[in-house]
Image (cartoon, rainbow, N blue to C red; front, side, top):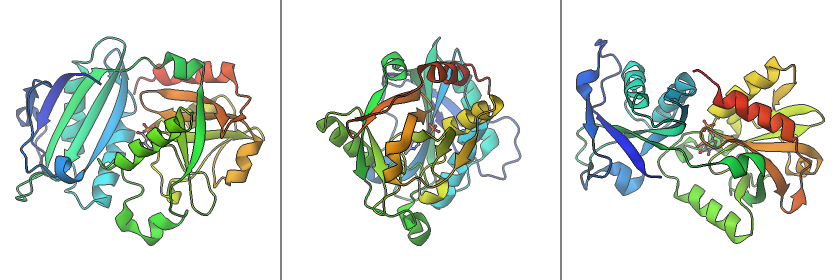
Length: 294
Ligand SMILES: Cc1ncc(COP(=O)(O)O)c(C=O)c1O
């Protein structure tokens, strides 16, 4: 990803009564250094992030991303983010989006190791071309995440439902998937349930119902999945959050990985077993996801 634009943010306290946060933003050359060596985001991945998609300067699902940012910050004991400030920062960043599909990344770090204050920034870049993934589809391999479905409740310090900056494990899973000849991974729990992909939510069509695993199983609640459910329901299709056993993958007749920038990538195969798919629905869903105005 080559970043085209960046905004450094001095995070405001959550009860800051200002209505204009312009003075807390500073334009920054994305090619120039910005962080000090004591930054805990760089040293420990100690912070949270969000990645939004945008089309022609309109960012998608701003409120859902902000809610998740706040949820992730709470799970990490970070100071409560001022959502009004972030909303303004996103609007300012969106104004500098290149034409077409873009990526807007929000980062909130615990800050410097001297405990001064959190640091935050936004960067904007052109989205990669995901036409092939959206039309030809992707092949998945299932990978054991090494935790069971109840780990998020039993061990909250694992921060399983938070979008933390510590994505090294997720990236390792993607490399493992590629080593095994696939395009992406599907995490499954040690007790045999479907979880999520390293950077996407799983949507499965089983017996005519569009199903996604619940966030309570220690996965991120996807903003794209929320949009997809809303669209599917508007088309009169049944949608459901429920636990999905790995064995049920054999009954899936269509499946997608959903995420903010790649959008809906249809799954062609899971562990080398072909998935029939639904090209017409995929195209309509991606068109609807791209056309979102909020
Ligand atoms: C682990 C994980 N699950 C799900 C998602 C999908 O979330 P969203 O649709 O909000 O991009 C992501 C996105 O990066 C992710 O990293």
